[in-house]
Image 1: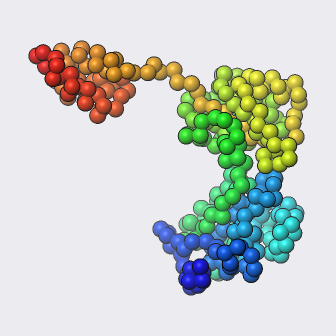
Image 2: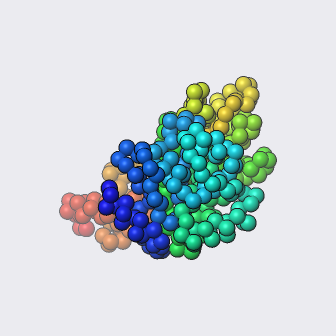
Image 3: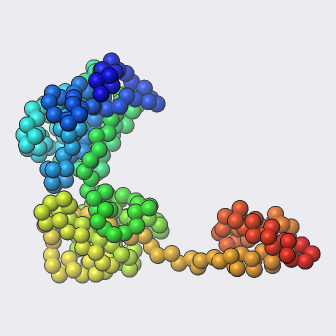
Length: 318
């Protein structure tokens, strides 16, 4: 660890467009003791979304060692810092001042300082102006390091009991019904689990619009994630819409997870492929028959070719 830490210290001002040194390292194996020296760069630091026990040792070390912490609300982040005994300089960085403050942060980074970026809760860049700061750092060849941790998006996916092999994060939907339904309609053909952030007050209306636009899909409403009253309510969109219309707005932060549309395409069997090949081989060459069948049945050409070779051996006059 010592040799790695000293090597990072020597590379403090190193910048590159293709590679970068690893981020903060703890001063000791346990993460306790004196804070580590951070190489120059922007540190995107995840903070708890509810349970303070989710704050990592590396996140604490990074915030303690940064020259300044860019945060959405200094009051919110100040509470977190005091909880972990961190005395650090903070600067507000949010939607309303990002254009003015971003050059100031870049100037400090260009001068060789380490800057930490946090949101009020969770992982920065999800529905906040952090992306533009990271993009500006990339354009200026300033290293950006991830200090991963809590995320409402990932926490909701973990408990929603819906497919996670393909996911589309859709952020916050428009406030007004017409705009909301227009955006939802754009996601209708997407064959992936959809994740939305939403306010508790608009939850029932949003679920009604999702139901009207997407139809009968499985879904989950996840709220108060990692907190004492954490809940994942599962059902169809229509069932969830009816529940929250009757129960009223719940308490806490809300994540809506919507399952992908059911497949309507009939499954293609080997027998289907063989039958199509027999018909095609009557008038087409092997190559053309394979191309035609693979295209018409939406099957991998290689798989169709293998079956065509096998059929050619047993079919007469082919």
